[in-house]
Image (cartoon, helix red, strand yellow):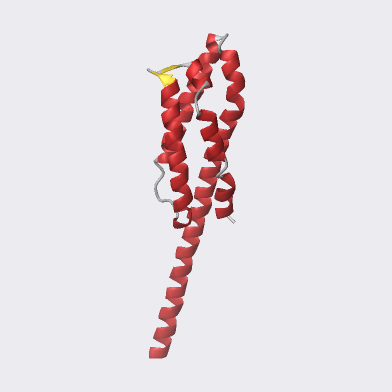
Length: 146
């Protein structure tokens, strides 16, 4: 009888640890997807913004569009920084991403002077190099999902 009880407990123990492992894998995959999507958003902005900056200097409507996109980007950066329940596997890289995103947030706040876009400050800001630094982490993040 004791033998069957021990075998039963071992089986349940193995099953529960397997569920925990699968939960961690699912959390890791979800995090990789979120982080990759965030980096893609930043990259997309960095690709389009230089042309928008040039055109916004002459067109107030485009300047407003660029300002709106920066405000949206700021909100997305803040949401990413606020992510909780980071898988243990991704803690270190997430901290690097948070550090880069905090620098990015400071730069966005600087070019959105008093709630208005300062084009000259945007052109001379480190915003795009910071986005490139964040983008460089994408390969490491994608490797977590494999």
